Image 1 (cartoon, helix red, strand yellow):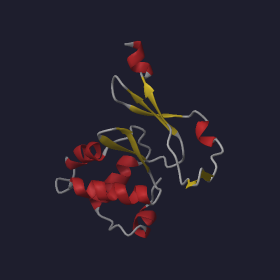
Image 2 (cartoon, helix red, strand yellow; image 1 turned 60 degrees about the vertical axis):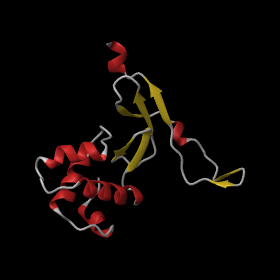
Image 3 (cartoon, helix red, strand yellow; image 1 turned 60 degrees about the horizontal axis):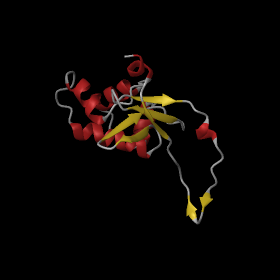
Image 4 (cartoon, helix red, strand yellow; image 1 turned 90 degrees about the horizontal axis):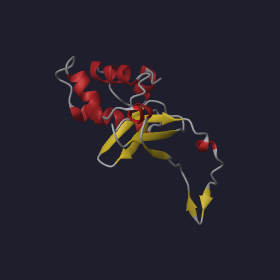
Length: 134
């Protein structure tokens, strides 16, 4: 969970809008985009701007407090679970889900062919269980 103290330490002003973004993300497993968050919170906070949502998410992602997921070519999604894990994109309903494959625990060397590795992502694509049943 991202705490108010962490928000302060990251240099973000504690506004009601930013606190609402934190509350929205807390335990959220839907991997929302900035636009998704904006649409939901705009009702309660009419002065909220999409720029505020993006700026807050970018600072949190840069600080390692959440993951930015680029599994869709046209959208950035965010995951408050910052621990390494895989994601799955359903080609039918476009939902993004967590996958606990164990593959993220592989021993990745710090350097390969002269490239210094800093991180990696592992995304899977296919049909989710709900769409498969339909």
